[in-house]
Amino acid sequence: SSQLVLQSTRDPKVRSFAQGMIRDHDKSTAMVKSAAAQAGLKPRPPVMTPAQSGMVAQLRKERGTARDRSYLTQQQTAHQQALALHQGYATNGTAAPLKTAASQIAPVVQHHIDMLGGM
Image (tube, rainbow, N blue to C red; front, top):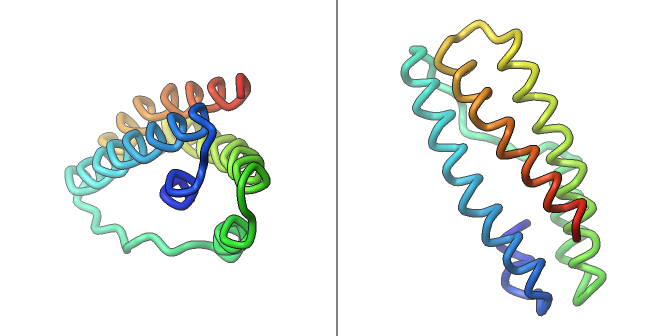
């Protein structure tokens, strides 16, 4: 969804946010993959949930500022869910490398939520 919005937005704040999401999510994905390998796990490739597919479909239908607004709302929801996931695993996870990754990723996710709050 960040790529889609990045291609269409004219709002410099939304553009900057989407670029940061792509960069930071690529980094966190690499961290999780590395941690999983260290823990001896082979995670399956990610698959979008029906809700995620629906969000992307909504963004594809919308244009201009309506797309930007939907993207920011969707990102707020997704980041709240991601924060709960990472904080929960950092506290209660069973694989040490993944616990470490989750504890390093959670503050970045919180920073994204803070950024969204200022938009």
